[in-house]
Image 1 (cartoon, one colour):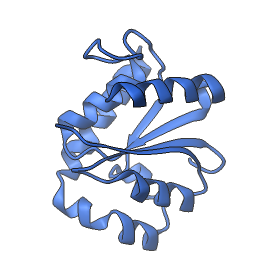
Image 2 (cartoon, rainbow over the protein chains, first blue to last red):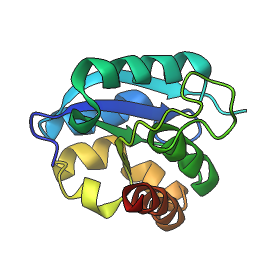
Image 3 (cartoon, each protein chain N blue to C red):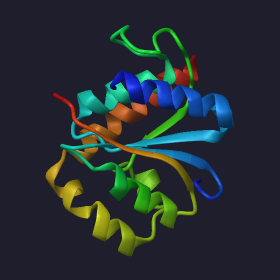
Length: 41
Length: 107
């Protein structure tokens, strides 16, 4: 599903944060091209 | 989704092609998940950002969805995500994200 794919890790401060998503996706073989953590107010 | 991030995702979709880019979100509730998912599929529902009326149609998943989880090495998932999976309404979030994805692919 993710192997070799370009992926955006779009986290949220009050949920799962970007770097944690990126770590998971990289381990699944994805090419993480953008990692961000938004703060929803 | 803030305007800067909308612009960045739009640029990445142009760079790599909409078919090649997957967005994996980590929003903390179902409503917020649906909002982000909608923004990268059918356009910014708030009509404020660069993705207003831009239908990128990107594949979008939430990190807590079972079909994403099964592709991640269990030890990495455990370390990075498992705690939040317990704290959040994973099922509601997964349903909300899947609904937007299904609606977008239906047309």
